Length: 72
Image 1 (cartoon, one colour):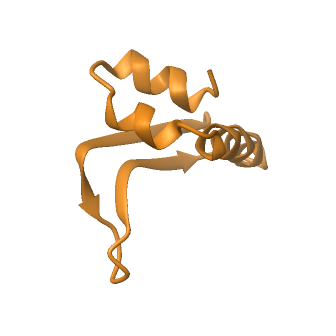
Image 2: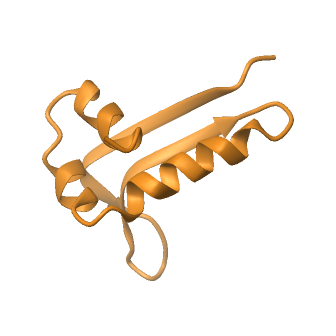
Image 3: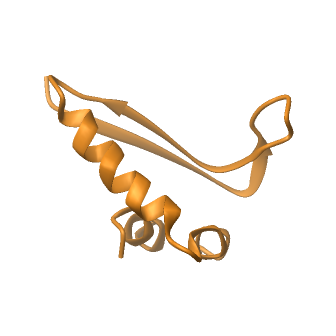
């Protein structure tokens, strides 16, 4: 088994929970051992960047989203 990710992008956002939080990106991780921890650390760094929400909302191509999620 190899570690894998599934990234789903919702350009308009979707209602995520009963608190009316909006999700634009949903990430599923299938990892062996503890590899998911490194992935989560990288995603956390990317998400807490100051302008991440605005950048995600302006994505036009998958490559742009990948760049954001990689912390660039």
